[in-house]
Length: 112
Length: 116
Image (cartoon, rainbow over all chains, first blue to last red):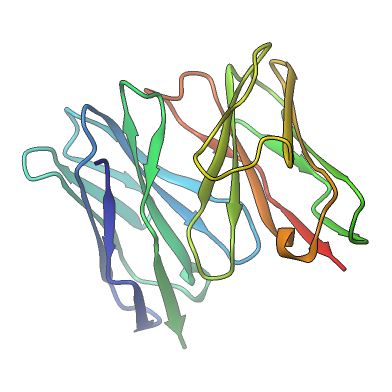
């Protein structure tokens, strides 16, 4: 069964600190892995998308890594800002089904 | 990036009425659109997959007669919640893709439905 598990479920950090969110998946055959940021009451916004051959991809203060062998990904946020408070969702694409499997998300709260 | 517009962003209706939500890809043609439902503090739950010109494919447990999906063109898909009841109150989100298996998913801003 295709699954995406994210950890931690929620995280509270102080402004300016770094944090790392984890995503483990069992989706097969793998197509791509995407990280999204979803603010409360808004639609998800893409942060990064990685294919099988990519190990790391950055988007400003967001850096995603992918280990296709262990089927793990991480999203690292540096120098956090209050506006980083949101839900971060890991989504893995399945080549066969043309569908994506969503993780339950990590809720990040950045406090001043 | 590509823009997906969803309308209305908020809608309040009486129980028993039907509500239509539109999802438009503004600057690209989407071969596939997806509809999701999201409850507070939960992740997105896929309701159905919609391909232009064909019937939508519904996920298990989603009533196709309750949630009517029409994908009449490559830039527009609609979700109609028929005979809405308070339990249908939720946040509905659409996404659009050119090649959903390989490419990016672009999400709409979501529509908050409240059924009184």
